[in-house]
Length: 249
Figure 1 (cartoon, one colour):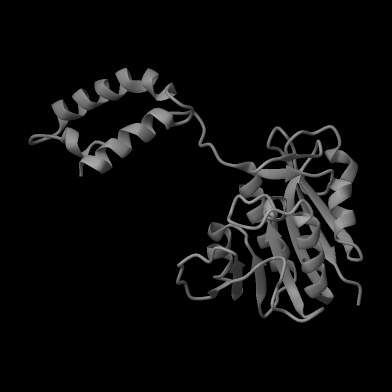
Figure 2 (figure 1 turned 60 degrees about the vertical axis):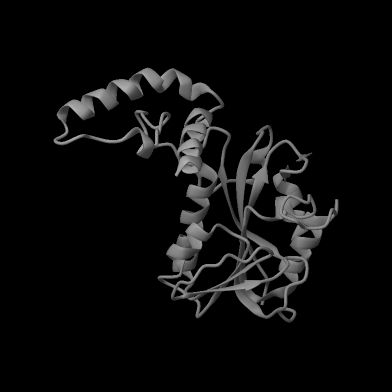
């Protein structure tokens, strides 16, 4: 119990930025005293406290990359219903919702211990997918390829990791199929060992010979542009590009 209490308080002082939580402590103890005064009985115990010091904000914060990419994928799949959708490495929160509408096979180098009807989980590597050439009709890989080869998730160091991942995803996409990819776009660079940021044109080139059908963009301000052009990402720093590719029949 002491370890949990210490954890709760340490995390409180680290969110939203290290030690900023200290400035919220007076309000926390003011609310504590007010609650104890109003509550029947002895009130809350200090040993059970779990301070959330940075949550008092006028608007609920969210990660625009992950929020919009999940909505984008859901809408694309709704337009083109499939018997099964294969995902490689994307957010489990997104996939858990999608699995209510379409059976999901989720492949991850670190397979989660998740058990949910409509979603099957397998261990796998985006650099060596178990599927035959041109065999997967509906495929996604959201906010993944930028990490491949940087060692962050236990994968081997490989400067060509992103390019190889793109080639492998393109290899397994079936004629007439759709591949949905999101990745950071903007000023091209390697932020070792967190991720890469690509020029949008570089991403489109990596997935040749697939054809780019649609491009969406979350810009640096977190604004969503559903119909964008690749050149719209030029001059941005850390945006999120969403690419819908197809293999011509």
